[in-house]
Amino acid sequence: MNTLIRDVTIIPMNESELIYSGDIGITAGKISYIGTIPQDFSPDTVIEATGMIAMPGLVNAHTHLSMVYFRNYKDAVENLHDWLSEIWPLEDLLTADDILPASRLGIAELIRSGTTCFADMYLFPETTCKAVQESGIKANIGLTLFGGLAESKRRMQSRIPMVDPFMLCSQGRIKLDIAPHAIYTCPQDTLEYARDFARERGCRIHTHISETSKEVQDCLNEHGVSPVSYLNRLGLLSPKVYLAHCVHPIAGDLELIAQNEAFVVHNPSSNCKLASGIAPLATMRDLQVGIALGTDGASSNNSLDLFHDIRLASMLSAVSTGNPIAVTPFEILRMATFGGASALGRQEECGTLEVGKDADIILIDTRKPHLTPCNNIFSALVYSAKSTDVDTVLCQGRVLMRHGVLTTLDAWDAIVATTHHWNGILSRAHQPKSRGW
Image (tube, rainbow, N blue to C red):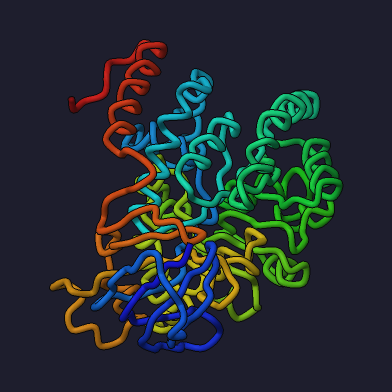
């Protein structure tokens, strides 16, 4: 199966700010040509892309997909920990049947905003795997650990037989990670179990760290070191670890992360909404920490639109440093593409547009009032572009959206089903139905 993307502006997002015009050839899901296409290349499908930008699909490196249920719910709280105390009782009521429509809805939102790969940490991962398999998107699915060792082992033993088959038949689109929720929800033996499991299985570790000043102070009081140092003490910093948030590193923390070649996932919208703080993005970059971007869950964002976080990441970096280009637009976009791919262990397959890599490509339609004139492409994508500018999405060469229309999912069905299940959850919680329809 050959696909030709014709007459497009190409930004590969490799280490240089390269921009050129031409065509992209795709063969069997891989990029086979960039720029000039050989005359003997015979496409089965031609995508006309005049006026569009081709760039790597975005990588949302930290989210909780099915928390779409809690979008716009319990927003009037003072901090993360108070908010969690409101959310957790309802999460206890969720079933596997609830997770499927919410996963479909979340994936529809991801694809429509240009995301071709995401990292998830949530309940009933086998059900999320089903939605991923249906949709054609890529995902690192976290097997979440929460609480004591016995419960964590039981959870893993029950989930692995259900999720492994999805991974094995996904053509590499689904990878399984282990996801100890946080140091304040997982005791030491659970964290050590996660470390040992990851080493034995060769998978990655996905966890929250230093999200709030309270978390940091509590760790200092209990363990005598920062959360980052505590993870390091337990052998939980390595190139196969990605750390969500890291808003409040103390002296030496970022150096430890860099030395161990671990990754930080910056979630600016969530950190702002919950008043957690502003992560020191420019300092991380200066210390050569690997950085990715994430939305966090729709419950704390309240969106899965990574373009919004791309813009906010740049602006927060500017206002917090007093330097409008402390982190350049190109650097921000690279965090959202190659940075995310690297954090998820996928840098050899996606994150840049290169011959031999998977054809994970999005087309941005620049023929819009708010993108005219498009004087600097990287600035336009960071400061002006919206998720609604995403025209076409391909993952492994498969078209997941064309002209803004999803091809593998029915968004309306997901909306209806999610609303129905949410009202059922509220009923079980003895709360009134959701407002709306």
